[in-house]
Image (cartoon, helix red, strand yellow):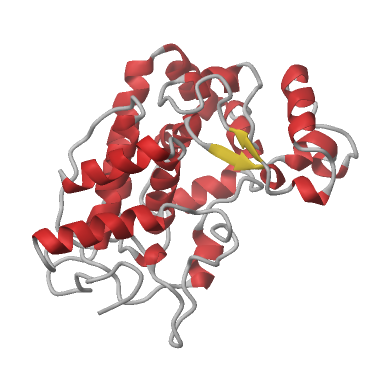
Length: 287
């Protein structure tokens, strides 16, 4: 309940936080497992993940996790790990946004280190071909269905202009926009993200119709060639993933069910249990 209230309170102040917490959990689990390593600040012994290229000036929500952790420490000291808090917070964020609810098993322990290098290597990028992204998922025990279902997390939240700008102006070095991009989306995104460096960090919604609602519109957008990120739109270009995209675009209940199942798999990647790791007192540093 403490986690639920903490996420709810943050959500009341900033609706965008739901997508941020979900992404924070994803970025934690994809780098050496769900061990809370993404939350660690740099030390003299290691460079943490916060400043890795996929995370720098991009991942957020650390303060929400820190606030929940201090509330939990007051109620029951050294009993709930930061990794568990982050896994629960991601579930609550999705549920608050109108998405599915799934059971979260607890007992993860927190890692003792973090790796900027591993974050740079293991996190999928919006510029990568689908084959590379699929390989990164497979390395974590996730299959093609998980790739398509978990990509549906982009039904909420925003992307910075630099993550899709080449689709607007210079697709694959052609000097022209991506020919598959819907023309009305192209002109609206060119307004939001003019072709100057100053627009790189501006934000655009991943799903402009229901930006804060967790639904299956993301897949409907892909079918209509109005997916924002290259890596998202690529799901329609491969026959195997395109079939799943079509199914999810027509059946919101199927998407919710499969997304929940994939989130359970995600939350169990490389977890530390028993005597491994520790339960941190503060999420930003080891004890």
